[in-house]
Length: 148
Image (spheres, one colour):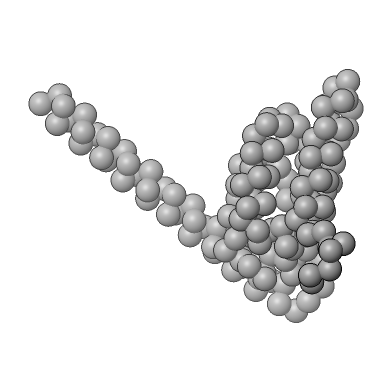
């Protein structure tokens, strides 16, 4: 796709998220809307550079605005890259953003995909808990050594 008029889909998704953020900031109160759904492309869901940009944008927006957002992602986009999708979904949910899987259930393998995503998310949560536990033990040991 070397056509000079080609625009990456991730650039379009960035524009949509940025424009939505700007629009939400113009509202007299964020409570005048129940929610705002934004459809993200599979390309962006699998693009770690987009992830970093989106996380920064969500941090700038803050919890009140983020709690009004719902990101819609197609099931195909999620299962194409389960690991990156799970990280992305877990992180945006931690920023108060809701996530919806589009076209979920349209295929026979949907329940298998959901189980895989749930298992991956559970594994990531267990990994994060183990790391936090190790850091606490190291910190406690350091405090014990310093106090001794």
